[in-house]
Length: 131
Image 1 (cartoon, rainbow, N blue to C red):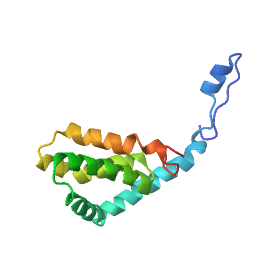
Image 2: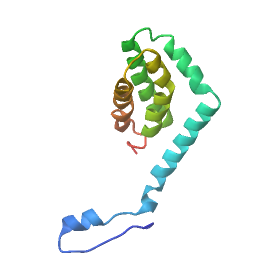
Image 3: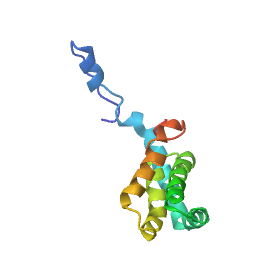
């Protein structure tokens, strides 16, 4: 499982489908994900996320601007933290209470996170999806 598996059949498509590099070939991506998760945890633990949200919310006077701010924050987190999961989870936790305060449906937050965090993840070369 660590070094990979190789099979030789008469069908080259089955060979490509069932043969791979194993867990060892994925370690660079896994280390990047672990590092990004650690970075996000530290930022939340020391209160930096709260400060960021407070400064961003000042510019969000309407529901549309709150959603736009969420999308931009998710994209920015994608660029800074280099991980799609952090770009979804951190802004989601940051803005959840603000969406509740403004009586916006949770689906609005989910869609904004999807648009800003998931869709843009592959566009950033140093992100786990780009790697």
